[in-house]
Image 1: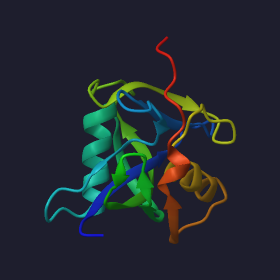
Image 2: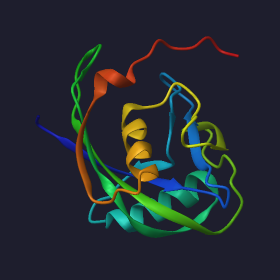
Image 3: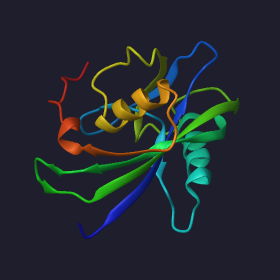
Image 4: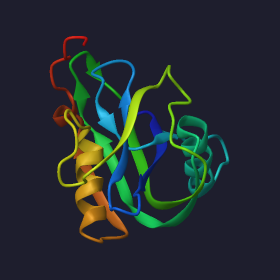
Amino acid sequence: MDSLTSAVAAVITDPGGRVLLCRQSQGHQLWGLPSGRIQHCEHPAHAVVRDVQADTGLCVDVVDLVGLYRLTGTAGDGPLPDVVVHVFRARVTGGEASVNAPARISRLGWYDPHEPPEPLTATVRQALADATAGRSGVLADVHRFAEAPPIEAAS
């Protein structure tokens, strides 16, 4: 692949053990973790704190790294660059969860990590399984084709 995109995501749980998930506004409108891209020369831990606050209004501290997930494979319209997602565990230190980036996120909510809403991205499905099992430092390839369910009818 000619290019590689670096991204971040956060597994954030509430006191009841539910995880914060966000539904994409565009495309397949999949559910995922609060996430974003790493800016030039930015540390991944700083990027995840910045993106979580910008998208959800929550202030968080990074607890540890769940893992690095390389999203790979082609989409229906041809090759796409691989994406390496740094998935962190994070804890809320302030703020209220709300949709602050409606162009990227249409909804967000707290869900049982064992019964998340569908459709989920392949990356979040793997990262949630690792996070709920208590794993850290995971290195995994996730195949993009698992992320392309049919687009749901608008509700």
